[in-house]
Image (cartoon, rainbow, N blue to C red; front, side, top):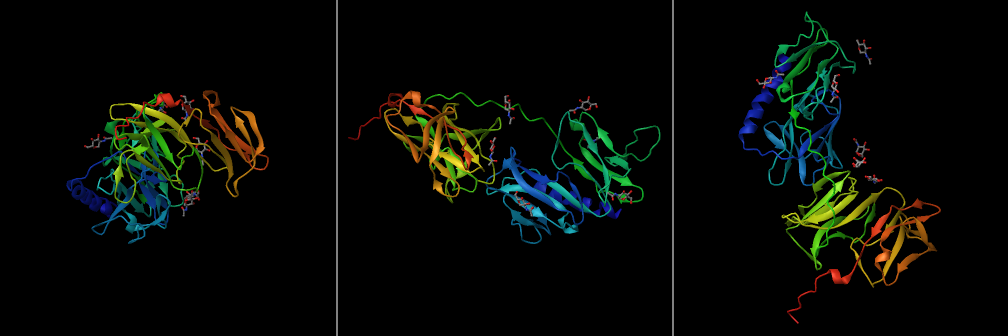
Length: 400
Ligand SMILES: *[C@@H]1O[C@H](CO)[C@@H](O)[C@H](O)[C@H]1NC(C)=O
Ligand SMILES: *[C@@H]1O[C@H](CO)[C@@H](O)[C@H](O)[C@H]1NC(C)=O
Ligand SMILES: *[C@@H]1O[C@H](CO)[C@@H](O)[C@H](O)[C@H]1NC(C)=O
Ligand SMILES: *[C@@H]1O[C@H](CO)[C@@H](O)[C@H](O)[C@H]1NC(C)=O
Ligand SMILES: *[C@@H]1O[C@H](CO)[C@@H](O)[C@H](O)[C@H]1NC(C)=O
Ligand SMILES: *[C@@H]1O[C@H](CO)[C@@H](O)[C@H](O)[C@H]1NC(C)=O
């Protein structure tokens, strides 16, 4: 009975927390490994994710001793590693609720993690998607699966004619009705805690990036480049019109076929701007970026590439106006600008030069550019975009 003690306390705690007016957002607490039950002295890491990427401005939280702990390092709440909190050498004190919270007090769903010494159920921390197949095991201290009795909502699961220990519990074609409390009892090793299986709808199908249309609003990258080294300087993506930031357009991006909002970040310590997205180097932000208005109008697009290789091509993020000059440079992670070969659409256009200048840019100069050196290989490719000045509506010069 003692085994369920923690669970009862947690269940009461949760109802108190639920009453205190929480809001639930798309951000979720990712537990790695993906389990709700852990043995004493194991380790786990917690990360606040939004669509698979670390959620900017969100913090992992723990409920402990009547307090909500938000600062890892305080009161046994782990250590920070990048965007994750690592809980190592787990013990009973780590049995608690965990969640993610942003500065406005918006909260993710709660995750109840339980630490145990005898047997655990490998029940996933992430909700299981409707229609998938799930297999649960009872695990003993040395990591081996053990034959056990499985319980759902406190009732023994009897798959055959007689109740007997099973090596696994299979749930095919998981449905909402499979939500509930799950546990296992291995005769000589003891029983696992009870944990709640959560079930969710499948993610909606990915939307392809929208076709670009030409508008006065443009997507801008600061610094104005398309390729970046990992561990490089701080980058932001904004929506601009005539060189001014427009506040009500959202920066959107498609990374690995998933289109999400990127805008809505703190531009400095106290200003929250919709059309401002800051890119952090601990995640791979390689993707297509554009601006989108509330009514669905879309700006041009830019592809931003993060590379962990040795070379980048310095190529402007904004389109170049026909008739102007543009200079491309090749940069090495260590030495800065290096003498290199320059390629347009795979064809050599500059042979071992310090920089590659295109004078009086024309539409035909549009294309995919890259650079390479013999020692360090090739940079990624990026598109030089060319725009006719006539495409921009004439500015209304009423002041002069
Ligand atoms: C911290 O994160 C890095 C990179 O993700 C990883 O290689 C390293 O093992 C982590 N350290 C700990 C203590 O988990
Ligand atoms: C679940 O298992 C059944 C039977 O083994 C199989 O036909 C089905 O394709 C599986 N579903 C998924 C989503 O893997
Ligand atoms: C774990 O312990 C069980 C029983 O004591 C044993 O049968 C099994 O081989 C052990 N597994 C490992 C990985 O040591
Ligand atoms: C467990 O109980 C809950 C609440 O009564 C119910 O909604 C759920 O369907 C039950 N789960 C199973 C697998 O029977
Ligand atoms: C993106 O979609 C394309 C076409 O549907 C597909 O070929 C490609 O594998 C997808 N890439 C990823 C990372 O899912
Ligand atoms: C980021 O992902 C892209 C593909 O989506 C890949 O080509 C690139 O090498 C990755 N960059 C890093 C630094 O991992």
